[in-house]
Amino acid sequence: MTRKRELPIYVSIEEAAEMMSLSTRTIRRRISDGTIPAYQCGRRSIRLRLDDLENALRPIPSACPRSW
Image (tube, rainbow, N blue to C red; front, side, top):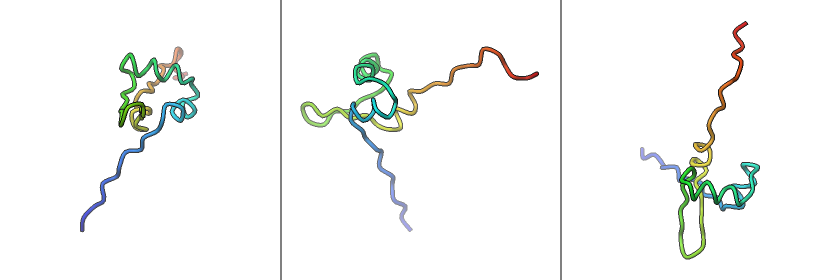
């Protein structure tokens, strides 16, 4: 039995900004500094992989561990 390969989900800069609660300008800055990879198809259509957006997030360490 052949297994279907899942295709990645791509979103626009505007959709990514809305999902991440950021401005489109911040998303474009993250693309420029390499934090979020972007893909282009055609002259102006920039798309971001949903997986790459999730991977751009990093956990913030707790200032005070709760081991009391």
